[in-house]
Length: 420
Image 1 (cartoon, rainbow, N blue to C red):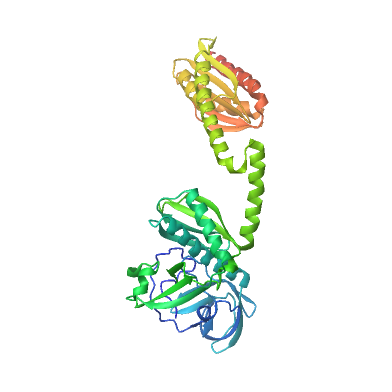
Image 2 (cartoon, rainbow, N blue to C red):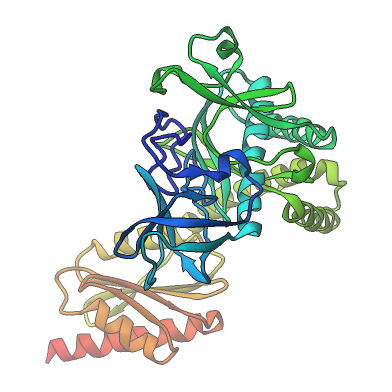
């Protein structure tokens, strides 16, 4: 039977309501999820949409993306469930009663089946380690396989869960489906939100005896088809949940794991640390970098505090070219210099790129943006700002001193012009 509530292809909300159906289409993907080719009779036609008497095209749901494929060599661009299962086949010429040959994109479908079963398996192993975890959303697409959870999460938990998930894959556990009434005692053993299910039955996906979960998706028959499961990313998922866990299965997981192992060994060699000590070595580097940033900020403030201005026609011109200086301190100090009367500040910072700052007090007839743009033109740079403050850069850090010298010359010309 079809499961209503999965009428929006690609819906990634795992909490979607489940109920039972009015679909007249015979759902071949439920009785045989491995059926890739089938014949059917066209029952309804509404523009580019076609409904068949039976179909192997899964319309999507539970986070698993809909199938794609072909009907009589014409591409099926979308599949949805609205009473019947409808197939979007642009520019078709099918008529009601016509028998057609159809084929789903099997490699894509099998990838999605593995991903969906992999999600069940991975979340199950995670929730056994932390029973407080709540599954919020699932996304199973050709490009991304992930799920969002609420609850405490860390890499140590994920490492344990990944080991246990791969042990289940190696054990070649059968994956099966069964139906149970909502008031059956076995429902207590199932991962399900009963209050969201309409009707009196629940479709349950079993992975061996280690996981039972309510689901309307399409799954593989044995964990061996996963080959391997690899967690590839852990990131914040707020406000939808606390964390998003991304993963891969199959050959892609194996190849990525091998690639990451080489990267880990290279990084370990560069840092002079054993692979198992790599995270600790990186943490030490981060601490060292933070300490250096604090020292740089302090030294930058001391250096700029001693900057003496050049006096030109009654105007104080603060200028300087620096390398490795804290940029925020540089900007703050430039604004402080320009806060005084008849003051201009021209400063540059040179690291991997050239950064130029022009600031001017409001009582001077100097347009900082004009000065900046004219200066950077000579160094193929760009920037922006306003009359009293402007900043920009160029990919020529070695030109810092020359840029400051040129900008100061432009400022002096502007002062001369204003005094005439």
